Length: 157
Image (cartoon, rainbow, N blue to C red; front, top):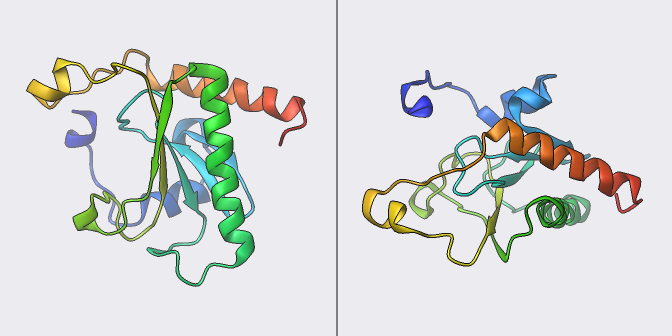
């Protein structure tokens, strides 16, 4: 309901958020050289993250090798953060390229990393087209940030 009632921005939400210095408020977990990891504000499951290029692009065409490498390195980092904090049974990782493919923000490509648990699909989405998220997104953000700091301390990042 918060999203439905909110004023929608005319610009690109990803470009706007990365240019601001409000990472916790904007749910940005990590800033890389060419990409960043941001939590989905309207998640499919707790911990739903996205890897987003800093530059505004709707395609993978023309990316430098370093950009491609970092894109998937950050996807791997997102998976590691989720493993440390939420212990999921698996993951959905994917790109919805184009509006007809399900992209909510079609003009700025992004890769979804969604943690999954055995049996996480209950009657709510099946019968009521509704998802139940058991933890406030800011609490999840704080837990994920703590895991990121652990990963840094371990020298993995």
